Length: 195
Image (tube, rainbow, N blue to C red; front, top):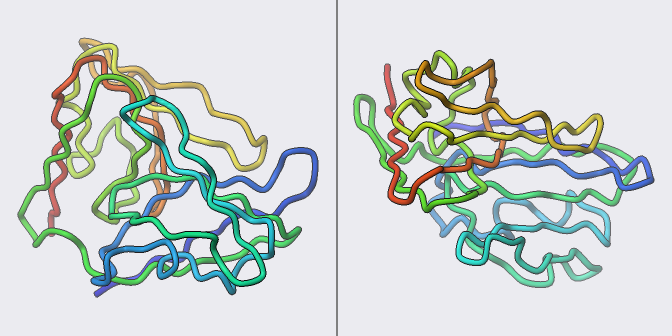
């Protein structure tokens, strides 16, 4: 069992309050939104948005009202999603659960062509340019990664993969979501839990 604290920024007005996160642990109960992001943490009119790989668009937002989240959705480890916190104050969500794989074991994520909203399925905080754990080296050239900047509330500049590897630094925090663009279908992203 492990845990990770992830800060979700507050709404300072003018389109702020969005944080791109990912579930880093298996909670053992289906990884439902209602368990992973307790409604009690969030003010009414907060929301969550997931990505649909099939359509290449965001799914309909799930809103938080007086009685809790309007619906629930499974958010398994490695799934990225945006959370809008309608409160002016930041909140900290504590993810609790188990790592999906044992030490020395790998997990393979087969990616479709195009964008996927993901996060590391293993709770690592590393830079993809040098990480043998998060290990995005196996993706085809012209693949790219893009993160979200909670300060500017905009996407950061994409980092692309070429023949020489990833073209720049891309640090990933535990519980951080990011867009991963795979330049070809069926690319495998293999992560390994090293001691």
